[in-house]
Image 1 (cartoon, rainbow, N blue to C red):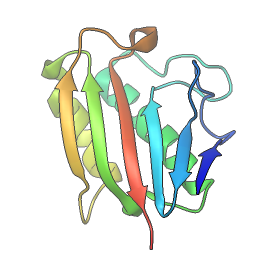
Image 2 (tube, rainbow, N blue to C red; image 1 turned 180 degrees about the vertical axis):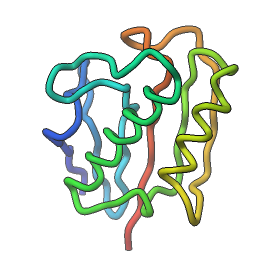
Image 3 (cartoon, rainbow, N blue to C red; image 1 turned 30 degrees about the vertical axis):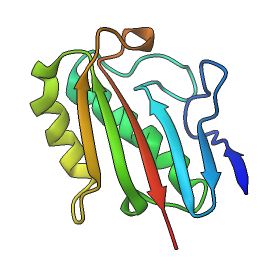
Image 4 (cartoon, one colour; image 1 turned 90 degrees about the vertical axis):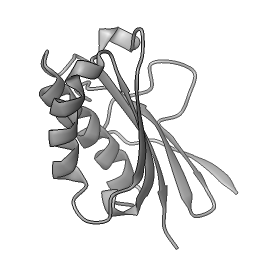
Length: 126
C-alpha cells in the first residue's frame, strides 16, 4: 500500500511531488532544501547552516509520521560545490551518530532556489 505523507513542520513541496511517500515499511523522503517551513525562505548562506536546516526538515517529516532519523537506511546529498563537503559532513555527523545510513554525495550544477545543499532519505521500520 502506498500513502503520501505531509508534514506542516517542514516546507511544502515546491513542485508536483510529495514531501514523502510511505510504501509498506519504507518511507521515501523527497529532497529537503534548507527552507523555513513557515516563510519558505532560505536558512542562512553557508553550508553548515543550510545542511542543519535541510536535516531538521527531513527529521520533522519522519517524526510527524512515527519514524526517526535512526530509521534512515539511505541518504543522498546534493551539493552545489564539493568544497562544502567537510562542513556538510560535520553537521551530518551531529544528526546521524550511531549506525550510519548508507550515503551518496554528489556535486550538482544547480539546486532549486540556489540552495547549497539538498538531502533526500529512505527510512525503514519493521
